[in-house]
Image (cartoon, rainbow, N blue to C red; front, side, top):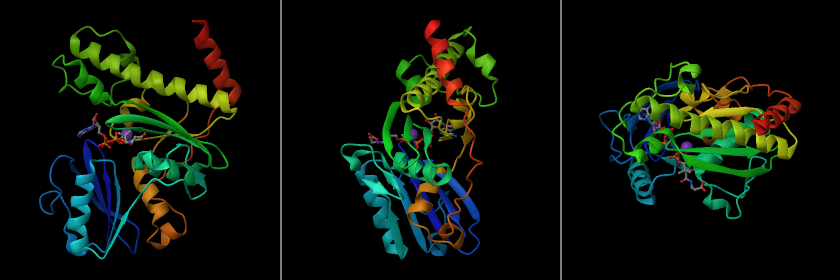
Length: 279
Ligand SMILES: Nc1ncnc2c1ncn2[C@@H]1O[C@H](COP(=O)(O)OP(=O)(O)O)[C@@H](O)[C@H]1O
Ligand SMILES: CC(C)(COP(=O)(O)O)[C@@H](O)C(=O)NCCC(=O)O
Ligand SMILES: [K+]
């Protein structure tokens, strides 16, 4: 078995992948601030031959996790943001500073779709662009839905947006504090993604496939006006592409990859931008 770890600022996600069949056998998540210790929701390390890790948590969390795993598992691969990988050049002036979860998402997106916009809706919402040909442009970081809600301190933190709400409902003015906050942060997130996607496609003269991942991807997806695809395992996809271990991975097949969404024509994106300027 392969243990894949995606340690974010809120949740440490794990999944077990069968080395022979490439199937996902189990998955789970623990709060990042909790100690990572086998037992409870954590898989039994006896069956694990290799571990792949993407971590944006504090250095000490990664160090402790790697230390624990190295004692019990033969091969531990830790992903790093580099200046170039798999045909993509990192757009940051200091490439190592790019969050490795963003780098994994960009590499997975490029592997699947070629040039793309990859959006990760987690503790933070990150929006990254890579052009056909592999030039990563850099990206945008804004607070995630939960962070936005907590920063308001209006006692609404425990009332999450129902991911099954219709976009129309979420667009409407709130009739109480919970609604006003939930609709407000929803609009902040989706407006940013819609606008940034259109602006960058316009600037670069290319309509890019749009891919979404992260804990709030389903909610944000409700308000995205252009074709896009959800890829919950996108960060894991970057780990698979960087450290291929199974036959399917070596053949370039990333698990859970969606069908590549066909973007709308650039003219339409530009027309939408022009229209929003007139309002
Ligand atoms: N069951 C859940 N538990 C915690 N957070 C959740 C859950 N479902 C959705 N979320 C949302 O997802 C976010 C965490 O998403 P995730 O992509 O795991 O973030 P990170 O990678 O930053 O840890 C939270 O900030 C919250 O808004
Ligand atoms: C922006 C992030 C906090 C997002 O992390 P997440 O929301 O997935 O926990 C993370 O990618 C990070 O720490 N990045 C380093 C700063 C940067 O990318 O510029
Ligand atoms: K994120």
